[in-house]
Amino acid sequence: MKIEFRKVPQIEKELEYISNSVKIEGTFCRISQSLVKIDAVLKGSTEIDCCRCGKTEEIEVDEELHILLSDGIYKNDESEFLVIEVENNLIDFDEIIQSELNSIKSDYHMCDDCAQLGDNFEKEF
Ligand SMILES: [Zn+2]
Image 1 (tube, rainbow, N blue to C red):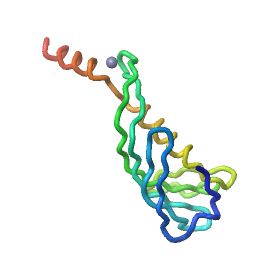
Image 2 (image 1 turned 45 degrees about the vertical axis):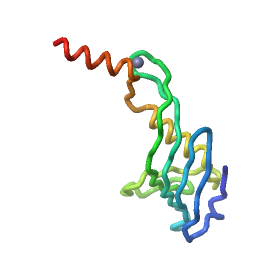
Image 3 (image 1 turned 135 degrees about the vertical axis):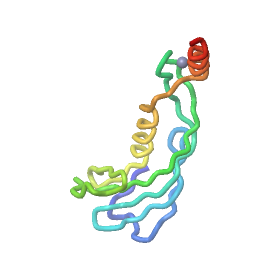
Image 4 (image 1 turned 90 degrees about the horizontal axis):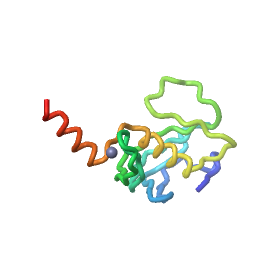
């Protein structure tokens, strides 16, 4: 789903969209000429690789999202929000969801088997 930056209303608008197996739900609104704020929750499931054996597992996603979207380069780096710079004046929700999932996937993850092995390993010593 793509939305033109300038078409985002200045009053909070409901946001509900499903991409792959993940749903984004919350509100978004334009807070200035070049900034759009998203307050939402990301819910669903995604596949993640075990960092130890490489096995792919499906994990639940339940993440709060507080993002600022900047139309073009964002100059103020004092923001407490995560800022995503948008190209071509288009907000692409698939891309936002995907980049959020990628950051979840880059987290350290161990499958149940390896987690158990890890516990046993520690007990032996
Ligand atoms: Zn594993």
